[in-house]
Length: 441
Image (cartoon, rainbow, N blue to C red; front, side):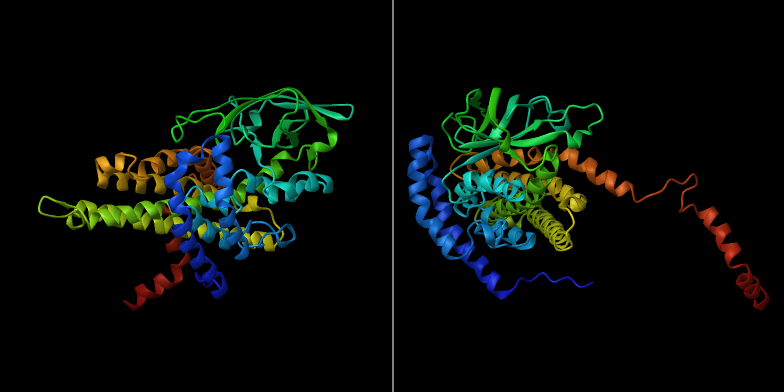
């Protein structure tokens, strides 16, 4: 089959506009980040970026991951991937384009499973930017195995009663509502993947406590009123109406896969945007800085960094676009995105490694300047470490990839490439021909 790496001319013009817009309007805002902290700073920031959001909407690029019926562009994963490669240059860009986590994934989830009333009460205000949300799944004791989650919801009359302890819940401190993953099915014959459900919990519901925003490597000085922090949350006897269930009982994992699969593509492409930004800084330094009588770019070690970084980024880019292409085909065929889990798992651990390596080299070539906060590299580097953890740690994805690949092989007591065995088979299969060759010799 033939591969076509081009996009249609109309969409390519959109990509050109996005590159210029991100570099001209969004990257400069990063330097003002300290002014936008806390609730008051956040309010100032939202007023400041509103005209930028309007420009995005005028281009038809707002919430482009959603179908046109929900105000999006209905783009497939390949186009979305190319968009996120550009948005990845700045951690501020996704919010200005209406596809920031966790809200973007939550809109997709609600689009898949919400009732009409839930769409009116939660999805539509979320799309309009009138509400913010969080996705409350991770637990301290479950880690990489979500089947070990202990948060529960039991139906008492017309109410769900939720109890549990969650943590690293992005934006929980400022969210207007939580989407909580809980165990709702308790029978011994219930398979783990059919035991969990998702339930909507409005902020301020009695028993919902946001304990704190957890300091991290990326945000060691995070405050409880900072947007985007990762919070510890406790649910104690939290009661919500039974109609707050999203989708079917026991359908939580199916909804989660519909949310996380595309999200991992977008993560990987955003990492490429970050990688390219770091790579540009690396190369700029290489042609600007002299050491020991010549430019750094004339040193073979630096040339090795440049070549290795570029090759790794290109490989990650092609792997990610291939995964996106496969997901688009699955969508067209009406098949689940989980059928592309090998491709998705591969790019998840490979893309994070590429990002980390390129950033490390960019910091190294800048020396003390790269280590300082006079350049964005040190902050990018601290944020990049999380790429190997969220949406499943690298090790889980490697196991998934390896298991899927090994399924394609059968055990052989004698290796299939065993030369003496193959020679004996060849002599048997070609006996007549070998005899004729011997007679003619």
